[in-house]
Amino acid sequence: MKALRLASLALAIAWATGPLYLLLKISLSPPAEVMTAHPTLLPHGLTLEHWRRLFAAGQVAAPLVKSLLTASLVALAALLLAAPAAYTLARLPARWRYAILLGLFACRMLPEVSLALPIAVTFLRWGLLDTIAGLALSHLTLVLPVAAWVLTTSFLTIPRQIEEAAAIDGCSPWQTLWRVTLRLATPGLVVAGLLAWLFSWEEFVLATYLTLGAKTMPLQVYYYLYQGNWFLTAACAVLMTAPVLILSALLQRHLRGAPLAGAIR
Amino acid sequence: MRLRSLLGLAPIALYLAGLTLVPVASTLWLSVAGPDGGFTLEHFRKIAAHYQFGEAVVNTLGITAVGLSLELALGLALALILATRPRGRAAFQVLLLIPLGVPTVVAAAVMRSILGTVGYLNEALLRLHLIHLPVDWVGERTLAICSVAVADAWKVTPLMLLILLAGLEAIPGELYEAARTDGASRWRQFAAISLPLLKPALSMALIVRGVDAFRIFALPLALVGQSFPVLSTYAYLEYLEYGNPHTAAASSVILLAMILLAVGSYLRLAGPEELLR
Image 1 (cartoon, helix red, strand yellow):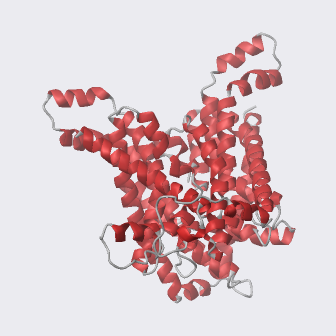
Image 2 (image 1 turned 30 degrees about the horizontal axis):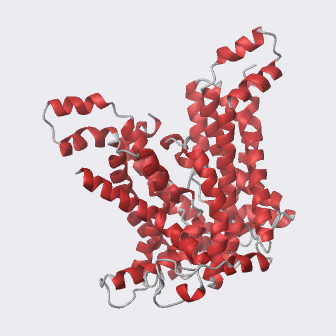
Image 3 (image 1 turned 90 degrees about the vertical axis):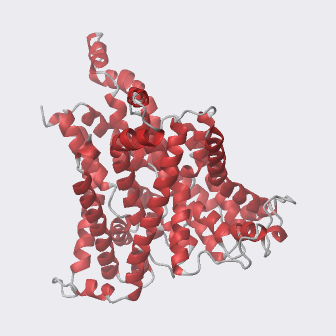
């Protein structure tokens, strides 16, 4: 029984990690190993040629910058907009709080295409297509409910008595907020910010609707894939996945099933 | 005082009103707006007659059914194994959760190199002498539906695992002790304790994942291509390839209705208290 369990775990881990191994391998393999009727599973030769070509082509720098800036802007704006809401929600009676949170959760269930279409039509008129600001604005619509949700659970863990004690010790309301509440909520703020960043970094649907020429990283991967260039696809995909794996490893300790379920996709 | 204390909600409320409610309302309007500004059902009639729309509905439902069953079976099995706390569980968990972080379009790219005609799956099967000719896993429609479902399951099974594991761990251990004392078999313990108490977590997982499966977009587009429509990509192609916002809106409205219908009837069956707890 125990052996069976371990065997299935090993199999599951191979299934979870194998595809990423293949991706990395393709990005480092000589073409003859991949572009054949019988691709090899183990690496025989290694080459950095594809990586050199990825950067030499000069196509990847602009998407990289655009995605980095958009994701960072989204993370920052999400915290600024969602933190006051979450703080308010955490201080509301539980019934109200859950009603509002459920409403926010419902916003996350709308199909992206039904939001993207009118947003694209409007942004075309406002000249916001192909801009970082426009993309960030649209990403925020999907990120805000999640950020508010995460931050509310985080503010809920801060007892009111601590704030009251700070006030008695002579802190003004702003000082209390800045020195006490926000300090204590830092882990939650970091988690919410990272989730927002990750969401924007890999977002595909809205980026497709709002992009004419200035691609983001996911669109660049899709472009190489569409062209049928395996090696540039693989290298670009690895480049895009690396920061994600690092950040989500940092996040994992904080991920606890149900409340965050809507956050990750 | 009461109103002032709600002030913090204002920015997010304004934002979501402007960039969520207004767009959804205008999608609804676009789907029924006639050329003279009046009301018409012409756009719905048009897509209903379009063979690709029918295909999109079937593909979406197929991917959802196959994908959810796969994810649920795999996620539950893994959650049950991890709940027994094997040695090295933390490391197992980290490795098993890796695909969750992988961007969807990257997952599609990887899966295309595995599932293509000269892909790694065919190569492995040929070497094991399980097949004699390479199979095009994303060619024929039924196979393509299964391939997309498998690719989706690869990425999101870890999420199922997380939710179900949290649910399993919330079940008090004394219940199992009592059952063992009464001589209940492992299977009986699972059926009489784990499964019923896991229902809220299962509901949560099914709703979250079901909605996402209905909305699937990047995976079928990048893995199979434009010739394999699902509801989201159908709406996208109608707008960006054929320049018709009205039929695009109509098909997104149908997608929205399907989501509401599915979630609503599930909550009706399972009881809303399952979700709210």
